[in-house]
Image (cartoon, rainbow, N blue to C red; front, side, top):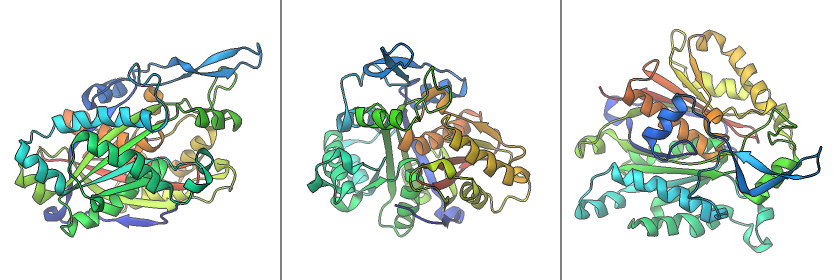
Length: 377
């Protein structure tokens, strides 16, 4: 699963990759504009669910699970059905930002790769005969039906599943940008979707003591989200007169040394390496926004604290943002959420500087950092 230490340098202006559309569905907003405004304002709407309950050890009563669900549209949906509802809401906003006539629409999607970013499937959730190729299962059961529902006329070569959790967006970008620059595709639509509101996942979090509760004030609060990011070559964007929200800068990744059972020993050097790689050309301290996927778990705070100490000379002027305080832990969607927030900040004039960092860390040790740069004024 690891994609090691690697990097993607920012290219010359003629071959830069532009972010030309975003879409976002969260518990505090169902569009990019509403969700980003709510998160920026610090809006937080945790609620209890009617579908999940946890045991109160003091009273021995069952108490409803608290988190950040997307309500009421997802009540009663689980598994792929829940992902599908989230993704369809997100694609609706994406297409509304692409005013294509019927003739242009078919050609547009034939020249577009579609990368789905999810969490890794757990073989324990599947029959033994299904555990050999987990990504193929997601492709057949989710991504292909999603494209059919959306009416996308796409071929098999255009579709890919990146089941790498929080670092999946960075990996998808690293995989598809070279293919766009080689003119295999004009653009790639990255669809990132995840939800912690699954019986199997809730049980795993409870068993591992990772879930925030009245008895345990530190831990993650379950959330869910879907985010779409349309990445396009500069030539393609100019050819259809698309608005450029932002540009991709450098993308870097590194591996932490972690305990095989628990990520509690992730000490931060890998995360510091990923962030430093994205800032390799920064002559002075970075003064932009940094979007972190910290989720309230102690090991994540320790990891970032150690990394930040190693990077204090570079990040002394940076402004940190923690989306999870508004929408909970959004898992595999968190990287795309960060890109949406950074791009919207540039568009709305909220951004602190001319570039932003989206920092991701997975419980199995993979880390990544995506640098986003201001689009054209």
